[in-house]
Amino acid sequence: MLKLSSSFDLQIKTMTLFGFWDPGKNSWYFWYSIFMWTVFVFFFYFFQLMFIVKASNFSDISAGLYMFSSGIFCLIKLLNLKINRSRIEKLFARIDSSLFQPQSPEELSVLKKSQWRAKWLTRSLYICCPFTGFFYAIAPFLGTRENIKIFMAAWYPWSVNTTSTFMLTYLFEILGLCIGCAYIIPCDTIIYCLCILINGQIECLGIRLKELGHEKQETFKNIVDDQEKIRIDKYANELSIRKGSVFYGEIVKCIILHKKILEFVGELQDIYSKIIFFQFVVSIIIYCMTGYEIIMLQSEGNIELVTRLLYMFTLLVELFLLCLTGNEIIYTSRTLTNQLFNCNFQNFDKPTLNVLLIFMTMTTKDMILEGHSFMTVELSLDAFMKIIKLSYSFFTFLKSMQK
Image (cartoon, rainbow, N blue to C red; front, side, top):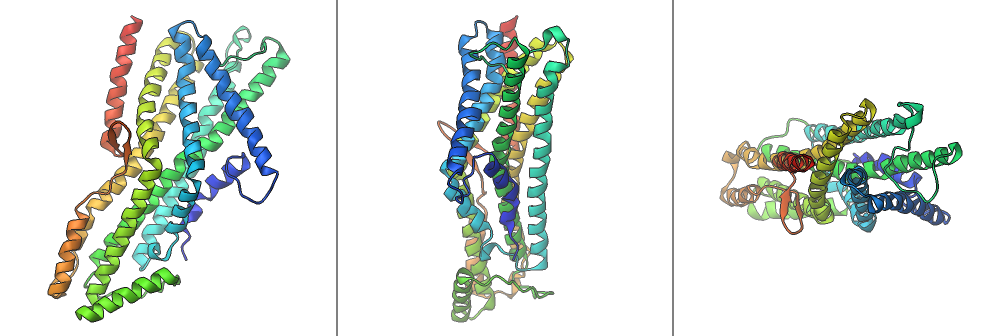
């Protein structure tokens, strides 16, 4: 059995380690989780909010807002993950179900590739995001000794002018940044991986459609034989006997798989619909604020400038990967109709051809992940480019206000 849900092991282990995913085994974990939420989530963002409230000019507001808005939105993602945890765990289980298991060596190769891509993407972000945080952490010590200051735009109810309080505050910010990465990366990569894995299932469906009516060259034994598979096989066999065509039952199996994939995509959208929409909105705000920060820091020093550029690049990659994985689902779903034309439909009788034509009309509809609120945005590369253009327009507006 191919266990595709193992693609999420690293995310779950990370969130469990830092108190954001209760394993349900230890009674003390509840209090550990309360401590992590209070100190490194509530107070961490409260001090940043107070800096913005107390700011007296637009440059200070911009300095605090570009990080605070990103952090708050990531916190919303974490809360959405916790609220919908049971539904997401059901998606993990569904991706391992018998219906989504490979039925041929070609399908096995496709699913293994999808699993490899999901794991590779997760590990890549686990390396890239802390790299950006590392530059923020060392930034205070790369300038002159007189200009050493904490790297987060935050207000604290204590003085940070002494060595001891500065080091303790610096340690608090470092831990807060690391723990922030510990829930930001899993929240993002879980939806990326779910999109990649379900896209692999759409590719497998295309392979099955292409092979309809052809004799299979290789035998492939699927070791998964649960009640769902037995029920579907029995239903398809009964239909084939009733219609007098073995291919009729095979098409019915493909229709059932297509329906299950649509249900999976629909559930995924239902969980992340609001998150997808506000990801676009918040991205525009952050890109504008960060761009404004870069303009303000051009005359101050290279280190601060590098940290802002790395931060903007990280956010661009985050949005790009989200749009890319959503775009792959759209593109792959559009190939299903073409795969039906590659099947050996010349061998089908009239009832089988009729059900094939009905199924063909079903496959003409694109599978699209969308974000809904007061307007609708689709998850695609076209939407990504529109966000970049819109962000640049707002950025030029802010720049003109500076003049």
